[in-house]
Length: 414
Image (cartoon, rainbow, N blue to C red):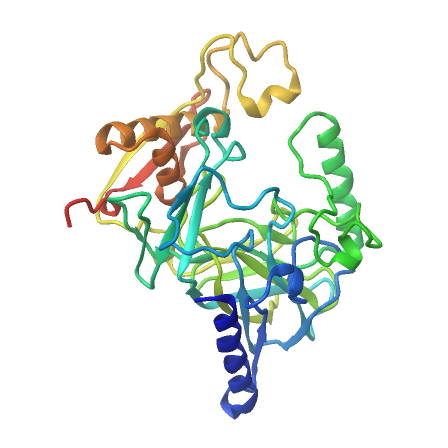
């Protein structure tokens, strides 16, 4: 479907909502018939002064119409794979829809956001770049693939023999920060960047809203990137945030400024290649203010049916990982600390990052040897389907990680 036809359909949908008395208590936000740059409801930075583009009552349905994180237009009948993503730079990410002012919500409240429905788009994508969790080890061959999506499963001509069940969820759900949190984030992330840590600092290129965050905007060096999650939510990429679950977010400014985006059709715990099955879609939520709210100072909370925690398969295969390494090597995540001790050790104490990397390496080896995929394909499969789970954190020095592969995704011969 072209952007023009999508826009016509959405226009009819929005008009029908406006005319129908039964649909009076519903707000529809977003227009994917145009690019993020042309859509007033598209944003990709965080700042307390980002203007609200819609209002909604507590309890009413809000439908966010959202593009994929990079605002790509893809056709799997034209191209199922490429050497790299057909878009240079990461300035656009994430292309979110919002913010929405929640009437009656005040600074200091806790906002409960319940996922009522998520309709996936018809096309998704996954790529492998050096940005991923194991990028320095497994992304020697960058690749981009396109998926066909329906209500039941995803398939790609570039990854034959794999069918991924629908596990759709929003990667980003967030409220806007207040001035205090904004200043604290800028200070601590700048400190980490100066120490050599990996941080994406404020960048005005392709920033939305441009009048605030763009190159000619009033606050181009204050608008936060949306890549990391923070105390106000954001890019948490929690695959359990499915239909029927509720997310608790701090309301830091009056009206909260609710925004969503970065929808995923399916993802393994860890999203190890840097992407899941990325897609757009339509997300419907309801909101309420929480009485006797939880303490969210360490981050958002969520709850829902236990069925949201399961793996989408009747059978699984799992591997384990421990914090072990070769002498003379320094794990990539610790290199910026420049410690004279790390290289000489073969066993790190309680290093969950290293244990997860080792579990991931074992799983990639297994997928390659058992199913015949190359390393890049196996890395993609791990990103969209393999769960990295903590087995135990107490058996020092070797805490344990398991990587769980759902076997029913392999459908060769059907």
